[in-house]
Image (cartoon, rainbow, N blue to C red; front, side, top):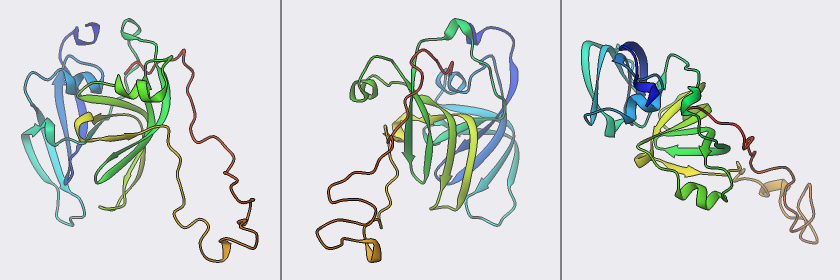
Length: 211
């Protein structure tokens, strides 16, 4: 409610689709990137001063004064301006490490879920067209986009697979010279021994993203 008050202000966005990077300016009364996307009255945004690039293309970026962008085609969005949380909008949330698979991209960061739930229940209650992810690194090996770190993105819930908690696994572990040895043990640990270390990191349940 409070985020929409005030006059329209320009905000620069970068929108990623499965083929394009679209940069432009939007005039809005909203402050947070999730509010900009979720409060749109139409299933599209109209941007100004737009540049569009294709992944892997050596062609020059296309430029236009205005462009209409279909929100269903947007995988995730990044704001060029960081916004402090609005105190009146704060809802207690728990930050949980997650990987968002949204081909051809992967995003690693913290999702914000209601506290006091196990992860299965928390994910069932996670709702919204575009959801916030904070302390984010995103990349795409498929289209050659390098790892980029930003404070917050809003990702398209309908296009995403959310994996939380997560642990990176080496698919080649245990193969070759470091594989099974006599007695069924593997190099670096006994048979049946699992790696040590947390597979996920839980945030402070008393904190909130404000996004």
